[in-house]
Length: 267
Length: 328
Image 1 (tube, rainbow over the protein chains, first blue to last red):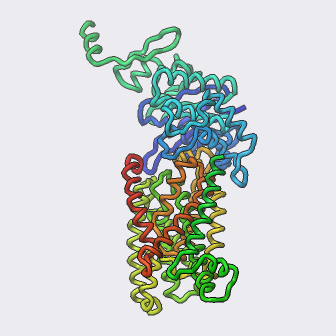
Image 2: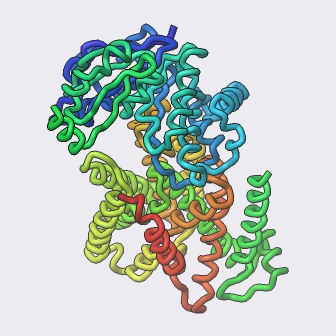
Image 3: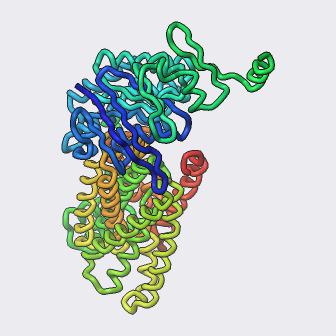
């Protein structure tokens, strides 16, 4: 069974420690949402899980193997990372981009085989991007590009999928569609998913578990309704965010200062 | 299908431009005599064709192909069309190595090796300098290239002036430095051809890994690329190709910049395809540029670097303006 287990993680950049003893577990079929304010260490934790940032303490275990014993190529076969989409100046087609997901399985001559072509076709199908395959990546819309890089990560056929703000730059309909797809893939393929999400409502709607991070430490880890509470949201994010319950899950509503003042005056 | 068509067209164009390069020259030689010269006729025309024009055309083709392949490699790794061996200072380092080798009296066949060492040192330095800020941007690579080019240029002048061996041939050496494909013997050509062949094989093997840089280094690493090893391999291969090119033709600018960039519009971005096509395209460009250099002001001869500079520099500026958003 696919899983990623991080224990006692300490890590950071040069002179700045960002993560100060973080534990995180994601099992097959789960979509774990990483939430928290800017600078809490969410993206840093994702990098650590993906083996892209060295640890100063702690351990990461991927599918039962200590990640320290794996080289880059081996890690990439177990863990796929969906990058935040950057611009590329080069006219790769969507299919060529998705095929990059097979990089860790390239033969000695750097060629892709029929197994790779099949994985690419399946990833394109999974993400509903088959009709985009021959389009140029620098000419598709932001939402389509997001789907292309998601398909690229799926083509890696790794058991663990890490996503860094997969819904940034997407409109609400595409945000929903992206997370719906990811949640479905987690359930049906038994993929362990960890996603950094800024939108607490998206986290509440799609995550099977939520981890709240602040100042490089886990504040709470658990069910949506146990983590996104009025008390914790106020404590971690500050005032101005109202948490209400609707249909059995929490909703976070931003409130302008004028409204807060009016409510205070009304007593 | 498109790739096959393009490659076939390039092959035909390469043959035609090579034929033109052999047929046209300072001394008029009739096509029939050229043919008999190639077949081994023992007369003046035979000597001119076999010892001057043929090695020169082959040298130009080798240099153009090597520079275009090196440009494709560098552009791919930097994810930016604004890179080639010339603007990154690699060529300047190679020319310093070559000039030192000549000044110290090395055997001519060792000159490409010295150029390779110079190219390796300079590209490694540029990479270190560009990395000082923590991440490599195209802008820092270009700046480091500018600094290194002027430093190496100053050292080259210093060596030229202070070396007895070179001062006597100052005009010839300066001509070579400007991209003059004039000092070619068959043995030099053979050494350079072997070096270029090794570099080309390396470039083709590295190409699929370079594709993985499409979204930057971190994503490449996440896809399973060992960044340190791949970067070192790409830089070494670039240095190999550049060293061979500079040993033959000195500083020829912009071929490595223009050719891969132009081909990308036709063939797309994947690097194996791009490199395979860049080699004949670069060869054609330089054979024709050399033909222009020999005939434009005949009987005087221009260094081929003058032609590529005149065409390439405005092209570089246009690219710079277009991609200003993404170079920093």
